[in-house]
Length: 418
Image (cartoon, rainbow, N blue to C red; front, side, top):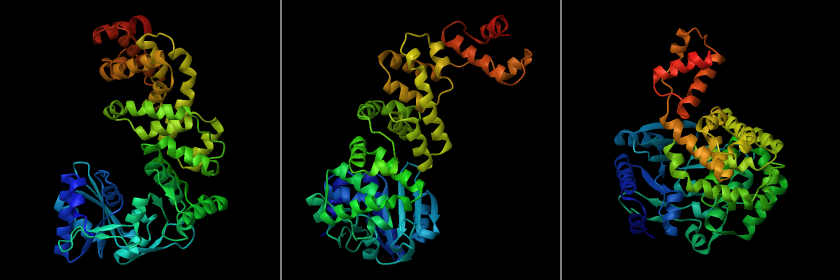
């Protein structure tokens, strides 16, 4: 079956142009190149795929990726052990390139040992039949669908199937992907896949996987449009209790996710990590002990830990924030709290608190103290906590309109803060 017309209809022109360029380059290098992964699946589903491109090359994928990156004036990062590479374009596009390969898992849950192979062997190593399809990109037979495991038929039937009986054992992160795809597409599992999934839960195959890999899959789940539904499925099947004992899934989280979606543009313009806010929300409605064990199990980085912990501590300020406050008072309450935690408060507290926090977020973008640390040192103030505290008090005065301009700031320091 040739789906070139479908690709043209569903894939954006700029993305399609990059894909065709890759096919021409493969021809010039005597290689066979294929479009694989979610872009193929989504096009067949009639969904407009994202911009990121996944390519597989029979042969030297690393050499192909390096040449393609040079052609496109893009940066390149290769991973020799896995025969894969990533290309970063200046316009934000990303192209993943892999050598067609087979995989062997020395132990359950371990990263695989890879060997070069033909495209059909490469597709067999994937998670589900709906993700095990490829499209030829070479000029000859461009657009031909390679579908050795009837993935297209499963797409039409709305069925999730693993490719072999060891799929979940070899890589238990596929169990989280299983839940994620079920929630995203509303698909059902075939009987064998469901049995294998339940067997994996009974055996707790998650114990064979590193916390980092589980974390990355959990973050992908949080990024889903139907994140709450996926988390609910995770809870209902018993996986959440295995992965994070004691962690509750509150109905309030669904409201939080909906409110967060409404704030996406503002968060993006503020250059704040949206996924951290989602993670804070996910953990924010659970007990402290469960949160601590989650952060340890899933290897949450120190920067994100700080945001999660600060969000928990900031709850103490909720009562004050829910009163009518001056901008300087709000600043005093929130100045040492990272923005991700501040947004969590904005989205979970009442209307008065949200107004206070919104005013604070807007004010700190436009208001700056003009007096510097050097200016304060000249007044005899030694570097340290006192100096920082004075600058903080000056910011409060600026926000409340008590001072305007550097001269008035210096006078305020001399009169009230020394």
